[in-house]
Length: 158
Image 1 (cartoon, one colour):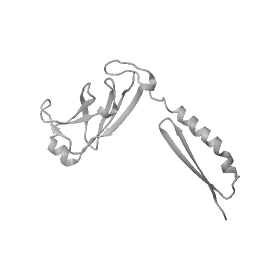
Image 2 (cartoon, rainbow, N blue to C red; image 1 turned 120 degrees about the horizontal axis):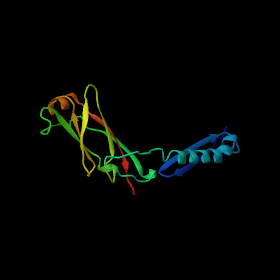
Image 3 (cartoon, rainbow, N blue to C red; image 1 turned 30 degrees about the vertical axis):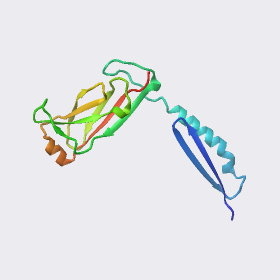
Image 4 (tube, rainbow, N blue to C red; image 1 turned 90 degrees about the horizontal axis):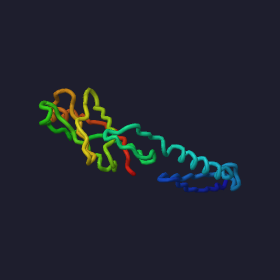
């Protein structure tokens, strides 16, 4: 039995999709549906591009919805430093510069396991400082391998 194969590359914005269709007949139903499948994929991409809406930011800036960006990450489990501002507590500095925010973003943080954390400060350079809620030394936090998961929502264009 001979197999026919057709590869189609689709680009929409930053997305890139490759479809690989195989059929035992050159004019099969699958090959005839290819233009319809392509059109549906392109339409699906357009419908999800602007789903993020930011109501307010710490510095009260507002920009067009297409400029809204979500950036997220997790700290390394050995990044904890003893705090001088909050004695007995420790903190991690999150460098959000790669996010490219033009103004202060809205930031949420969650500690792993039994770790409770709070956001201690934002800087205009997109650095965030996250402190332990309870008195926990950096040595203990690093030994336990605690990480902070974070999300930031802001604007990356005018």
